[in-house]
Image (cartoon, rainbow, N blue to C red; front, side, top):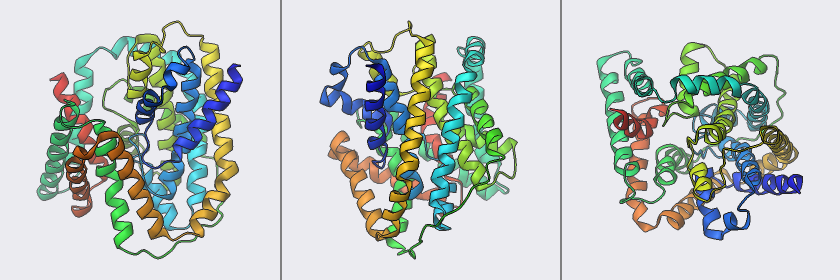
Length: 392
């Protein structure tokens, strides 16, 4: 029975992951709407398999359309580069490599995470200092005063949007869904729509896998420390690693970020099971229905995660040629328009018409790094500033 429900969860997560701009937190909200949580009140492992599979397959729209959620934000930049070079299939494959190795390494390192969280997990000064350090790094990596001021301005503006939308639910329902799309995905899609880009045909590319084993391990190690800090995600972990290890190739970036994303998910469940600390809205939903429990069979948990990631990766690799064929035979501008409209429809369906003003505002802010030639990871100040204010 358990295996059957894992398989059902994997297939459900796989389909949901292919929907652009659909985050696992939003899926938890949709589960409430359709009453799925009531149908599976005790089956935690079903919902774990859904989360794992959804994350794995969500790299497909990130690679092909550049539409991220807050777990795959940074992955879209190197994968978009490969897409423009006609190597989208390679980009998807590299994401699968990072997910596959990332899960195994994260499970092996769970005892170390337990020890680290016991020491640093409730140390507010550590959390405060880490967030402040990354924010300052955004500013001081600029070479001159003009660029430093531009970076600081983007931090303040995106942070103000975060305070306005995340510190209270009065203005906006599901703010992450609205603002993550507006900050990161919408500018890219609009540029692709109005620039009338030349059609890029995707081709075969065989990756060299000798360095990816170590890169995945590095990603999991960085995720293990980043998960201790509220508001930090794979974006911040990848940024820190890229500063420590220079000259990462695009291929290494993709493996790194995908391994960070999947290990962050596993670590989030671990913290919820062992310390009742939630790092995902999805986990908060499960807790509210008493699905998260401290009495978990860890052997079964590891087995469920391994089966889920293996089946999910296999599904993506089985259909990868169909995804590429679809992209090659389609009008790219039309695809981008459809993806944009689907994303807006999902936003309005969940957050209502009142989300329009915040969608437009976040889109305007999302264009600022493009205008001032800044890395778009700086827009993660949207989450970091509200968290920093919480610990001051």
